[in-house]
Amino acid sequence: MKKNNFALVTLMLTLLFSSAYAQKNKQQTLDDLFLKNGEIYFSFQIFGRDEIPVLTKIISIDNVKGNEVYAYANRKEFNRFLDLGYTYTILPHPGTLLSESELNMGGNQRSPHSGTVWNFYPTYDQYVAYMQGFASDYPAICRLDTLGTTTQGRLLLAVKLSDSVNVTRGKPEFFYTSTMHGDETCGYILMLHLIDSLVSGYGSVPRITNLLNNYQIYINPLANPDGTYHGGNNTVNGAQRYNANGVDLNRNFPDPQAGSHPDGNVWQMETLGFIHYDSIHHFVMSANFHAGNEVVNYPWDTWVKLHADDTWFQFVSREYADTAHLNSPPGYMTDLNNGITNGYAWYQVEGGRQDYTTYFHYGREVTIELSYVKLLPASELIDYWNYNKRSFLNYTEECSYGINGQVTDTVTGNPIKAQVFITGHDIDNSWEFSNAYNGWYYRPIAEGTWALTFTRLGYYAKTIHEINVTNRNTTRLNVRMVPLNFGIPNQTQKTFAFVYPNPSNGNIQVLIPESGTGSFTFSVYDITGRLLQTGTMDGAGDKTVFPLDLTHYQKGIYLLKLDGGKTIYENKLIIH
Ligand SMILES: [Zn+2]
Image (cartoon, rainbow, N blue to C red; front, side, top):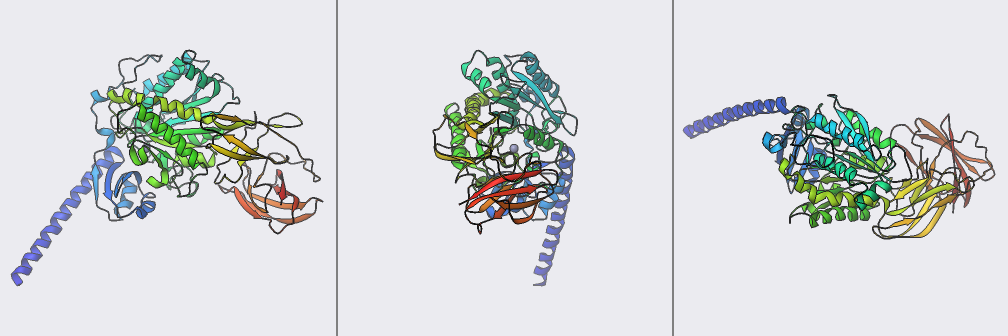
């Protein structure tokens, strides 16, 4: 026994020693990796999906296949992950797997003109030259916008493509952005290729001519240049997922559920650039491109609830994937449900731009994963272009289908910014607004029969029933709204406050105007001007929608007044 005990102790000591030694070695390897890249790529097993909501707040999950999770982390994130005790495997970083010859840096054709063969990765300087070249070669249909600069001083660039490139007209705005994960490079080159084909095809290819005549298309090929050119301006070898501060930009946006800073980081310069760009436009639809999988991912990512337009999202995602299937070898874009998935059903993401844009800008954005291989060999870029180029156009065209039209004042004929609400359907900011300058609204929606309610402070709400929509067709619905002259003075009434539903049974939601911050005093008046109720609504931060229970009032017409100090907003309510 004693001898046995001695053997056991020796064995344990040996194990302890070698384990400590391995631990030390592992630590050294990790230190080296973080020193080199600032981030690591790794995989581990989970027991069940209920672990994902915890993990997604700590590390950047990239994929979940059954119980196998693939993720990225910076040093700080990884230390938090280690505390959880998972057994993990460090994987080769996807941004370091290709030789310089496979990247074909700089390519053979360096001129920023049409006819470029997009089978290479440009250097950073070439990228900028191409973007400038598109605009200077085609000034009538292409404008270059700078969204901002990055931590390391690189440019965030987008082109606007339209026949009315220097003005905003009553045409839907559409946005493609790619490679916010710097090592997911396929979409970067495919977007340059798309810009090239749109500017050079205008006037000769009818479908492209039609697109630029009837849409305002914005394309940002590279959302994270510091990540993509982590290895220096002359190569994409060493491209990393995170930006120069080690932050995953697709976890850095305000989130409908997790608040303004779901990742605990300040908004990065890139994030601020895109928040600003989203704010000065109204993108009816948009998509952001990634790699690592082949699938179209639609909202929501942050919660299990479905978007009001879930059927429509499935339709456009299916259309994208099916079109890609027709133009690619068997097996392309067949991940999850044959190439499409609800975001949350795949894995939860907080702080992603898809949900940010869809929720806070009343948009419709999907996340499209273009290729299994993140850093795709340059020789395959043309293949992936051919798989996706028709889908790019199909998806863009969808933003003028559904219901659209112009909202104007019946007396003056002036355009009106009104809320466009699908009665009995819209939830979670799925409604639209018409444009303040031209009155146009665009409401992509699934095939069916719908009722639309138009509301605007100072006007009678208007509901129009039995509007029929068929897929890939436009139902035009112009609306003229009647101003109301209510007995209460509205000398300081300026912009808008929206109430929905209206008419209602008294259970209403009040939407504070976008510019509204601080505290609002609300007052409810009856038709004779008698004050019935008063209280406060705190409009600070992101909280902009307040429920108000007026169900105890009799049927009739009431006035809701919001006093923000400088501005008073009024809205007429009908309780029935
Ligand atoms: Zn990605």
